[in-house]
Length: 365
Image (cartoon, rainbow, N blue to C red; front, side, top):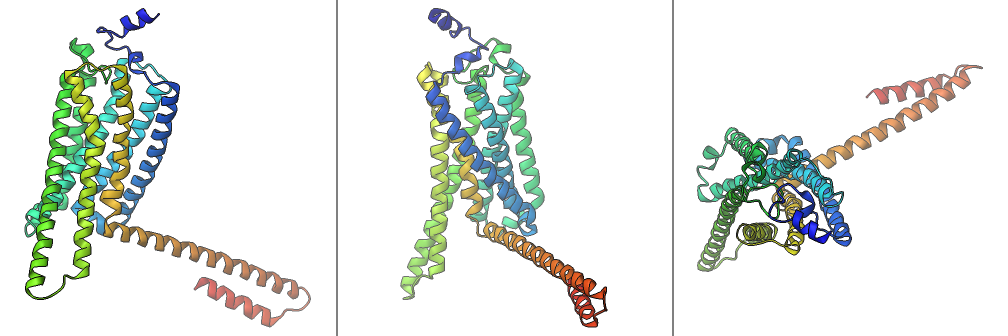
């Protein structure tokens, strides 16, 4: 049996999905807990971000929140498709037909590519706001933002469908990836190159913003020392928050995408064994982790979005209090009416009737 397994998982294992189902029972349990926990948090966070943006007319009118909304949609869809497909493959060991498997994989590729694309558009938006602040409103408009993320989503979907449309190693009889079933190595090289270029620009953009922020802080300190003044605490806190946000962005990108891209590059030039496949399966959770931390970094650290969220909470709280007060008033009115009705069987009480009318007027008001 071992010899047969080695033969079936050798060079000719083009569409043998069992060769990629290499997790043991303990590893399956760990991966299931990780996927379900991160997936649940990711769905809840991104749903909240989308609800706040859609509810707030102020946020909807700003181009930068179109990109953040696009990022939330990509992470929301990606987390659902990824968790379902990943657990279905590695835990339930479902053996789909090649077309069904490539269709599921296309959903994962499209959503995570769109997530990186949304990060790229957000970086461009923030880069222009720092590099050309006077021309920002002319360059970045609401219409251009909608066109930008629409084109980005279209490109992401088209790229993800290429293996299903024929760019796969089974159809082309070419060299297959050792970590992705049915995926042609040239397609994997193309996707790695495209994603790496986007990530490198994102890192460059935020490094540029961090450098600009540092220079601004240095200039403020030099001016205040020349004028024998102290730097305003508000300005110092703002610079510190900006620096923390930029460092968080860079650290999240490097941690979440670095190991994955490194293993993918190794797959192009080296031989991947079962140990590396297992490491790659766990490193795939970093994509999900990236979708989990994106709302925290890009949305929840935004003062405007937090203010909009608190406004929604206050409105909801006011509505609930109004409903409670209305229900209490209605119950009290019925009680008074019942008392007045019981007394009226013997002799009408004008005082009770007056109370009832007053309560009805208050309820209508």
